[in-house]
Length: 433
Image 1 (cartoon, rainbow, N blue to C red):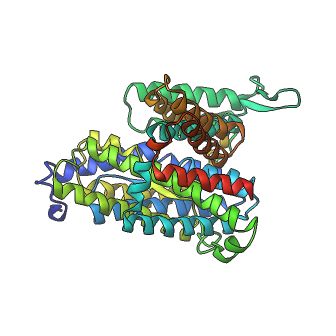
Image 2: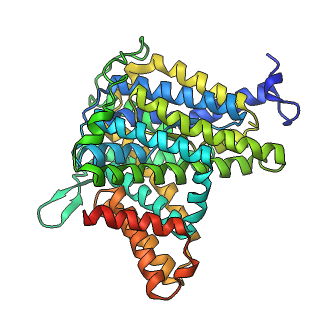
Image 3: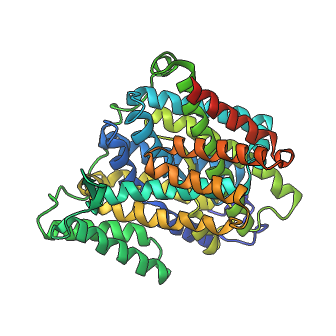
């Protein structure tokens, strides 16, 4: 295996380096095969089928990235997007999960169209940095709230809505221990810290009799319960009509664009893949690969697929070409054999992963100019609105609409990009109708 098609020599890499980088990236993002079935299972989807769909979507998306763009970036169903799918689109808005998959497919079609026409870059460039930072932090807070609930650390209260859970129970204590373990391992730069934390909590639960042992290896479960089960026609005709449809598609598109585009640009910049004109052309191919993967994921039976910022770990290990991404794809296919292990992992074992990823997302707030109220207030409203209304969509609406109103009220409307006005107007239209 010489890797000539990946131009290893021209990128200053080798087959061994690329394989090690791929394994490193896989270890840092493999937690999704345990977390995604748990989250989408809350929407009524078959967890075994979602496990298979997650592995296949990650493998296919990563392979597309490696072959089309020759970039060392792994793809998988995105955190935040899966939570919006399960808890807002299905849980709050009442879409059955097949219709929600139909909406993911439709958003993927729009995403591909925006990518091919160049409108994707126009939209991303038109959204202010403050709002992008607030949105990322808000999604983190939303994930943290879900994780704290799953761990039993936060429970409902008639008096205060939420309160601290019972710390005399094993589950919340195990979740806290897992969170601390992940933090220690990550601080020590141990690859796969989140994955190790999930497995360690599961093993502790097994030792305490809280988890039933079901084996480690087996043939993958059937994909039939989710494969091609998307209901596009139902998504277009039910549950609130055109306004609700536009609302969901807008949120999917916004989160997909900010998450994937920012990750692709950031990781590629770190890898030195945007230095030359010929390298920058591959950025467009990477955008096509990432948007096409969303369509594939919806057909398989999972929420939107996106580029993973954890790919930076593989870049740090020396990955510079698509061979790294293909290695990630191969390892996700190998993970299909570990379905019994995935089925054993309880919610309080995946909760530390959610909380820890949430904490990492909160660092986006450092980019805010807190001295400018017209920038800081909308970002804060977006961030706070997501967990406190239990909806990423509501947080986005609060952020965009307040941003537009504040800029208009202070006479600074001329500096607002057209894209921001359009998004704010769409949210106003949605809630007005």
